Length: 374
Image (cartoon, rainbow, N blue to C red; front, side):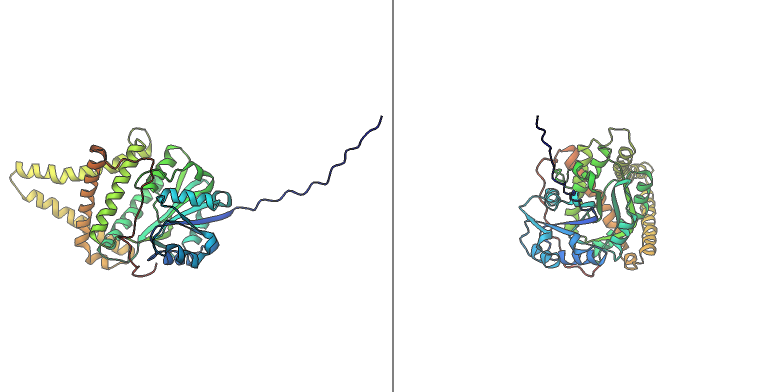
């Protein structure tokens, strides 16, 4: 009987997979030729190497892609058919294989900028126990709207956002500074059909119980605000409608959780403010036949807003904000009225419903060349 000996070829050593890089920056853009160059330059100055910066151009009709290619090279630019921001981000993430090549994916708007140490700070403070992270948003120099936003953002991020971080109720990971752990990216639907995909994605993290969100206040990102009153109203109308879409879609207020309680309180306080000034105050003024009641309430509100404005000025060293106080007060009430109008449109009349089709975004009518770099 003959025995055959089986000989095997020497096994080739397995090819080692490349270790994942720490952080990728993905910028979504549509008709952003006025701002895309400065945003990319700002990211590089803030500590991002060009080879880790990617741009998805959502079928721009201007020179957005050409400018991005000049700064980053054609391999890091993806041009897609008109898709909407959320779907464009999804396509780019797959095309560039970001979830396989990086541990964290940072998404940013094309109209912003970053403080000189932004990405160095971000990388040093990111903790893997969190599934997402966000920094501190400030306004780029601009007109009256930007001055109001300095007030709004400072109050929001110095007080509200710190409280949210402490209670684990961060309600939104904003467009200018949003970072996600790559391994949970597949669980998030950015093409969610809402007008504010970043708010919806934040709610998805809570509803799927993916983990907690980290706040890094030392990492400062900048954003360009609308250039005039009309564009401001258009922007906050979209924001309010999108937020209310998300509230309805994720049934906020119908579950026992800290997030549901906090968001419900935020919505309720807008109604209480309106009710207090325009119903209760008027009622007592008529009952006691004294217009002084309304005048006293108005003066108290003015002085309170002025005090907050002074605190903002001291915190930001933006002395021009103090001289802008009158229109800051007006913008504050205008924002409340736009919210109430949006609530009637979305919740009561059932308009602007979220759907499967990703809403198209357009910034061409409200972009302008930055006054100064971040």
